[in-house]
Length: 265
Picture 1 (cartoon, helix red, strand yellow):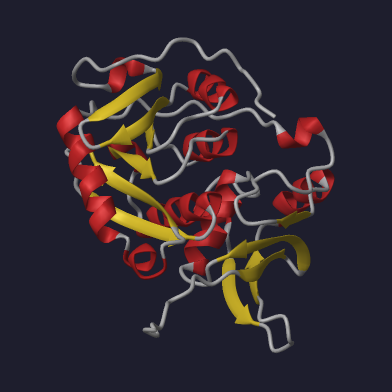
Picture 2 (tube, one colour):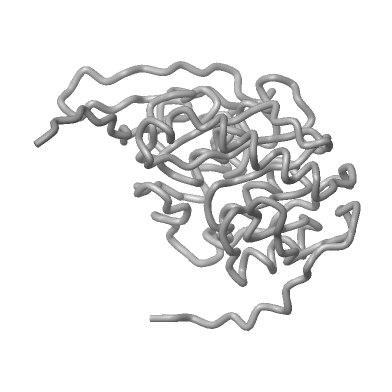
């Protein structure tokens, strides 16, 4: 028998606290938490712009939970809106809607995305390969999702990993905001399916094209159409399927039929 030492992905409770008031507890990988907090705040409409985050501090907790508290200060008017929404989340990994008290709170309207630049199949292929090579944490653990942003020619400029696909995309959105990078100047690739929440977060971050290595859901396609977001699924190697807003693609590509919205028990 051969004994091997394995690396295991970390899941840590991360509490997001605004102006001293707890708002959300998410299970996340405890790296790039400043990016995560900024991205979550934007994609969940806690703030309208990164400049509205007046202060941010990451505090590891000293109790037995092993958790981390991220304290943010936002304008009083934003806090009042947050209190009005009354959305206190206790989110499992990969669950973007846990804790919403009403359907109206859970199903939000996306922003229209900017026009963006045309993206070719070659650029998408390059980005997918660079994402595969750039997933250091997943290479070590086999349990991580990635969200990456590439320029229109497919060069990956930012990549974030997390055990939760929503968290990885929030980290990416926060990293772009904090670096001053314009999300409209490129596109995003995610190593997961494209759920409603993934399409919504991409639109809220101002990313004009989202490519997922797995399939989208019917509601994600509807959100993409409403936001003007180009949504690609099954993006692997030289192939992908276009589910919404094909005009940004620089060349013809397979187009999916309208989703039937089937549910499988």
